[in-house]
Image (cartoon, rainbow, N blue to C red; front, side, top):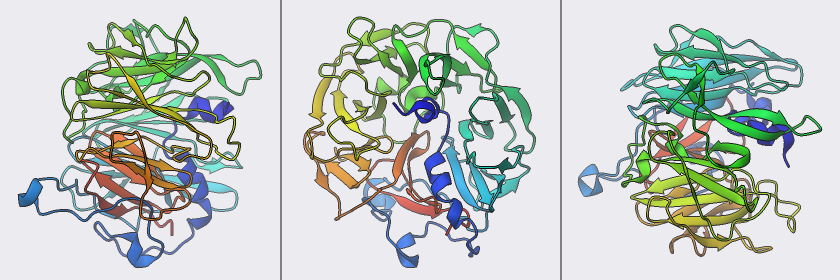
Length: 423
């Protein structure tokens, strides 16, 4: 059990990178570059990175995101909308205080712009715990993410030109997640020691106001119920090739009421109704599962504590695969002691070439047989960064908070960009 960290995992974005990067925030700023590979300035990030192809060859050019090395501090959260716009949260830390900033990338812009930050300075040893949810073009929600929770939020609908203060506490119910809205977790019962969540429910975030509503029909799951996968954002779907019917589905992760094993619930109507899906071979005591999709194939990763691998902090228990929209699943990979990948630091990367990639604590691991076996990529070693599936595509972030990123629409071709003065 990861206590507070586990409860806040889906609310805080890139917190680990922010905390690890605090020591680097005093580095000097450099001229902004567009799509630069960090290999030219030092250590090369782990994982597959191919240069952008000729669009005439296969049309797989990755999205273009400009670098911005003059932004203050290190990124603590980055998110994108399907139109190519985005938001970034940054922190510039001294010995006792971190000043938080917000930058915005407008659709088609060649540069990020700093906007007025609504966030207060972080003081003491609390670290940077803010969460970022992009709700569409020019729309973003920031949550404070402290423990005990303050529930404070800040919402913008005009690209950061103005902010509305709100609360994570829901007001009323809603029958379905609205177009462009998001599905989020709400803890309603703490564990006995008060350090973790014992039971949660799902809320919908309204894209027009950033307000929270309780989803009227909750998934038929028990325990800690959480969103599972990039499909948590409806109406803000990925631009990469996504097959039917996966892009219309919502997934939730929790415990099966009968067996207590980890399970998924699926909704085909924006959360109005839910069905559970049988997943053979799931483990008991796992954390919330995450789902990614590519060209109609779904992959679900089940994280959890590896009892026989005490040195692994972000254990990977199993990987499941579905080709019928989540009606049936097959377990294609199971943890075995000493066999990599033993850990998973973000979402799986499902690529258009049929490959499946895991970014773990000891390197990058790629499968070419649908997730049944994995091989180490390019001799990669150590923390390999983490990947998040976003409406614009897969976004990779380094593990050390220095602001190095890569983005891909198809999981094959990647373009690099860097943010902040974290190096």
